[in-house]
Image 1 (cartoon, helix red, strand yellow):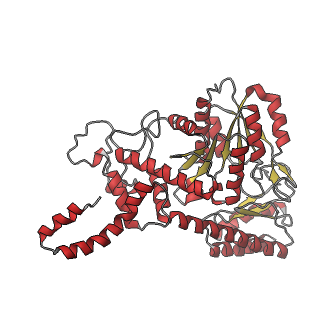
Image 2 (spheres, rainbow, N blue to C red; image 1 turned 135 degrees about the vertical axis):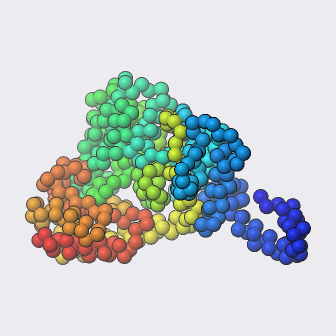
Image 3 (cartoon, rainbow, N blue to C red; image 1 turned 180 degrees about the vertical axis):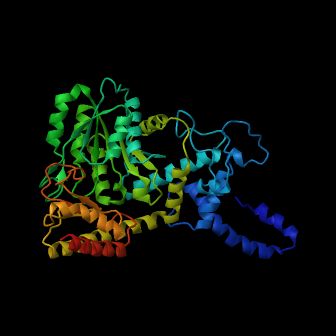
Length: 459
């Protein structure tokens, strides 16, 4: 790109060669990151500016056939759009990605989008490896949220291992009280068998909600001829703790069943990545699913499926029906390039600091109202009991916080419905607040202060 011949041709326009030579130095420096990205095929060490990101997207999107000014487009789907705004919000990739039957198949009309997709998968894989998962072999970015992505990963794994879901329809899933993962499995025809959450001291923390590996084994042996897989989880709202995925991986390997990990927002937590790395080495993990918005600060609607098995990811790609929107993929690419590796690592450090600040702030509040912090060591969120608030008043807290313009807290009123707690054994109702990647310290301070005001209103 921008070879010497290009600058030599400019001399005919009346600018002295020594001036052009000097100017070309700065010009090439602007384009240097783009060239290095193609050559090194990994996330840049430092974030790019918006001009550089837009130039890359323009280069790639103009390789698609809808940008060819002389192309004769008579098909039913030719990247036609009604507004320039649509081109802008799609990153210029109006043809989408993949072909019917395979998400990562190169598309004849969209060479640029195909390159963009492959580049995104390579870059996100390089980052994930550097964060602490060197034994991951491949990554696939897909235009689904976490729940549907778990279903897609399951469908691909069944195809890869040649398992008929009609013969083995049951899928074990450790209890997380979230509808999306369950619906993802049900969407492909799976029948869920939920491993109930238990409350108390466990393998991970002094207290919290956990799953018992012995109970998993017991339920499996009662239904072994019908079970094809198990879905475990690394992260959910406090007081849920990560599953003992190393023991589950060993169990899956011994019993030859598929093991998929719901790692929805676990990439921001080095301790969880260490657990996954050890589990891959110790047993069986077929695929790991993580959300793009929860980990990489993109708009909602994408996920990254990773695996230590390249051929399995290819089969997952083939399980997608039709072409797909390129938007979630290009959004991830933009986010990764804007942050760079060092920018992402610094956000991880801020997240850890904010998580400590959140717990300290809630502990101070708990002491004031004779409540307690549930010591579950959740890496992203904290839970504070609400045992000294009248049961009929607890639900009002959520509405008060909403009217105080605090978004995101979870009020779990076990007196009304235990759903959300991942167990039927919780002792008290509680409130959960998060310190996920990207949160600002001032928002934690304000949220806790407004929670204090809300509790005073219902007392």
